[in-house]
View 1 (cartoon, rainbow, N blue to C red):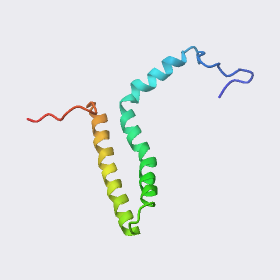
View 2 (view 1 turned 135 degrees about the vertical axis):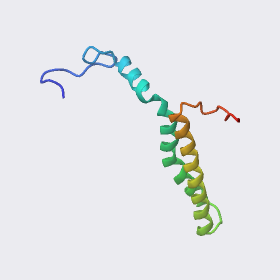
View 3 (view 1 turned 90 degrees about the horizontal axis):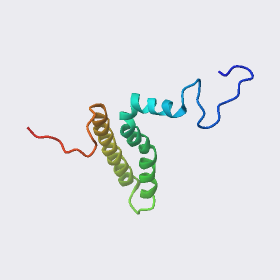
View 4 (view 1 turned 180 degrees about the vertical axis):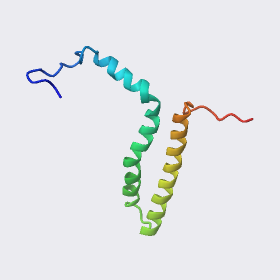
Length: 100
């Protein structure tokens, strides 16, 4: 909490004598390698419901639509696991796997 009477820093102003840019860089140094994993998993919140919504415009039965959403969810889960493994092992996302 701020001390009574102390004003909030202006945009770009130092916080407790540490420039804001240094604070942002510090965040990326500590967990920046997880950005791809974060992006993929958070976008699932948008992709899976969008798939279900788009399927609602088809003439397919409810069971067929449900099966497609389930397959899409499994596929997205596999993608998420692969990206998380790549992030934790510091593997570039587009790097081809090495064969022995």
